[in-house]
Image (tube, rainbow, N blue to C red; front, side, top):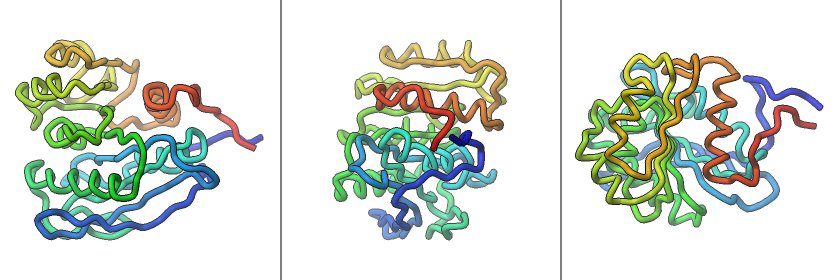
Length: 236
């Protein structure tokens, strides 16, 4: 048995993909699938702010793709929003401040639908949580998990709309976040009756450190594929 570490990459079928937006752009991404079985659920990952270094390879999203297909049967779809670059390449277009990115979210959902990926959940981180709240209210979406939601671009009107949407919403909020901490988050999210706010002791906005990555991945699995919870910390 070997311990799962920050650098661990578990087996999966990994495919480079292109997403086509309704306004004519091509976005680069990757789909990771379980190696030897059909996926049981899908994570569509929405990365942090690209003007501050956010991209599809932001570490929590990358580690989700490295581990969750093998450990919990997830399909993990990651992509760069418009104008964003990573090792995979650069998506066409330019940063839209969270507005024109509505087409990027729609393109990812369309891809998941066309390819029959099951049980789509949004996984947003920071800026990505704003995209999930504003543009993720699609019938295909079973729910959303928000990491470090700043609730900056996403307004009370967006929260009210999600409340009406009715789908599960889980916010993982670091105790030492730079923008929104657990007490204030609980107050803001009272507008969404089905929302659950989970404060994470000692964590910071960027979730640096393997213990915090494990907390995030376990909370995802607990909500979406509970039969795979808790995730193992060692593999053969």
